[in-house]
Amino acid sequence: MVRAGLGANWSCLFANDFDARKAASYTRNWGDTGEFRLGDVAELVADDLPGMADLAWGSFPCQDLSLAGAGAGLGGSRSGTFYPFWDVISGLIAQGRAPRLVAVENVCGALTSHAGRDFQAICQMFAKNGYRFGAVVVDAALFLPQSRPRLFVIGIRKGMPTPAALLSDGPQAPFHTEGLRSAVAKLPDTLKTDWIWWRLPEPPRRRSGFSDLIEAEPESVRWRTAAETEALIRLMSPLHLGRLQDAKRSGRTVVGCVYRRTRNDAQGAKVQRAEVRFDDMAGCLRTPSGGSSRQTVLIVEGEHVRSRLISSREAARLMGLPDNYVLPSVYNEAYHLLGDGVAAPVARHLAEHLFEPILAGAMGEGRRAA
Image (cartoon, rainbow, N blue to C red; front, side, top):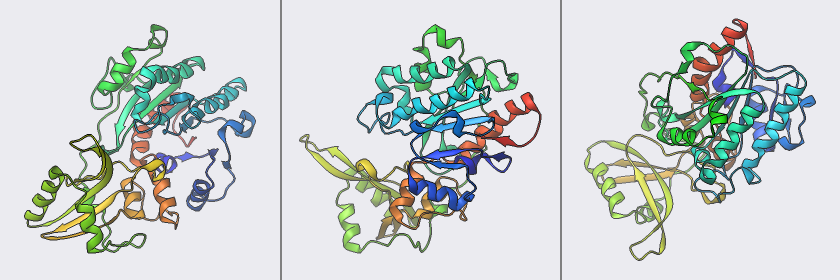
């Protein structure tokens, strides 16, 4: 998905994941041209990577940093793959093949994990390996009708020129959130000397809504029976039942989305609740593993209410992927792939307004390598 977002002016020299299903999806969309390496990043060494890249991008697993996770942080077995990624980068540096830019992406929980120490550790790896660095928080909702804020830490090799137009004297909304500013304030002075406040323009106002992405007759999911839909409605609290009643009285077709969540009732007991939103936005796509629920679509036409899971293609559209993007035929595989990904328009925005201007100033116009 990052490759889709970067665009045609970028070529991929090397790609890696340990999930065979993701490998199959990659080759279905980009061809089996040899640059994809299936396996654990901890087993890679610099000699496995060809050439010299303009950009090294690492999206490491979020489970140990997520607010819904167990809190293991960068010491966890999954999010801890951040360190083997940097082992490979360090090997490239030792061979004189340092990437000009390095970008890592994860959930915003990385800012507060272990009281900010994990974020400090991320910054230390940039500084230790000879990069000046900064971060932005970009919500996919700026481009797509999906609430999906993500943290992007972006480093530039020391000694490379940086266009002044890309630098800010201090934090700027909306990309330097209060959480990011707070995390930066806790950094030691030795790291603050390498910190950059990246200047990133806001995109034009988004004009599409969740209802614009809905398939009339999806093939990957079935419509639930009336009894199944009623059972879902019975899980709603009075607040969410009120939202449903408002949608029924609106006199128009209303599209909503529902997540099942575990909440405490008035007596403190844990109960399952169905929480609905009718703001023409989808909730953040999540992988169905680890107990996360899959998102349900609710179609309200007066007193008639229908429900079904969000389709694979609708989820792909929420990630900014074109309809010719080939998805896994198994629904859970497609949903897992998409819930784990980076929204393509976010990658394009970073490429257009940071990566490409930096590289244009350093090496002239041309095709980029990642």
